[in-house]
Amino acid sequence: MGRVKKSGRCRLVSCWVRDIWEFYSFRKRESVDEYGRQTIFQISPSFDFALKHYSRALIISVMLPFSHEVIEDYMQRIPKEGKQGSSHLFGRMFKEVDLMIDKATVRTAIHLVSDDTAVVPLDYENCKNIFTEAIPLMHQGASHGLCKEGNYPQKSVAVLMGLGQFGVSRIVFRDEIADGKVERLVGPLYSIVMFDKDDIVKDGREGIIYPSKDWRSFLFRLSDFTDTDPEINKYRFCTYIPHEDEGCGKCIRCCPSGAQLNSAPAQNGKFTQHLVQQSHRFWERKLQFDFGRCFEESEQMKSLFPEWSCSRCVSCCAIEGNRRKYAADHFYKKMFELTRIRE
Ligand code: SF4
Ligand code: SF4
Image (cartoon, rainbow, N blue to C red; front, side, top):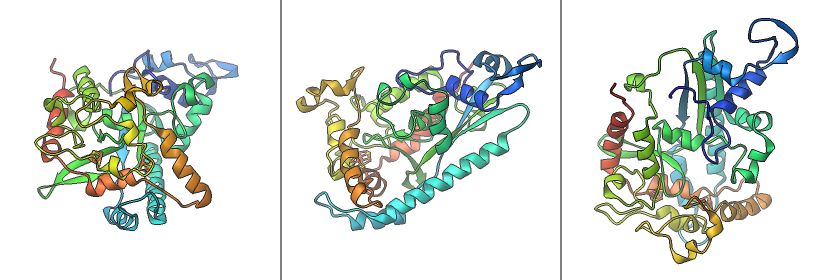
């Protein structure tokens, strides 16, 4: 990633590079100040110290894809029509895969620790702890927007790093060509932030993505499903908006609570009158996901059946969601082009 910026905040996202540094620094505080003098206090090196001491912040984003066999099994167990149906197998697989990648993230981060690096694995525990230690209460919870355990934008980071793309369902997935076919990968996401002293890579070496302005502008349009420009749409893994085809929309049709339908524009990119009237759900003209509907239903079922899990939108997209070969073929070339700076 690029040079550590002083203004580390990104709109509503209340956790970014500065906060991650401050969390690290607080955890590593010593009774020695920045000039090596003994003090009676425990000093946490400031973000200004990090800006002077390190040349860049590198972000590593990782996904461990779910097994297609287990998801397929789940798809067969839930009815095509009607709201009811769950599979504890999917829930169990989710937990196990999540735990594996969570642990692997921390173990990889351990290998990156050296005298010249400051490393923070953004695993489940650290994501949660950052919010009690580094983020003021007034930037948490509803003051940020609905979230799970923390406000660290794991999905947006994965998209920025080119690991995957947002679907209209707000799920991040990755399409790749394997044996001439499009393979869809979906699974839990984690990341590692490393402050180090190496040069900033701007030529795409070693697979490092430089988040240039052009790349960020492209992603911004790619993730906005009200933008139906074919020149953008053809790069989307998500086939919701038609492009020489009928368009997909299966995640919306299979959602039992209606949360997906209540969170997406129509396939022509326009919001229905019903959605436009819900003005409180728009932030800077972007419609926020209807977590209320999604959570209410599944939380009620979980309170009766602890192993209940919905995730129909994820499963349906992974197994039955329409693919776009052009996007799987050309997106990574586009990424390479936009993340290289010719100086
Ligand atoms: S998890 Fe279930 S209820 Fe929630 S958005 Fe996905 S399909 Fe709909
Ligand atoms: S199911 Fe279809 S419309 Fe939904 S996210 Fe996947 S590709 Fe897009």
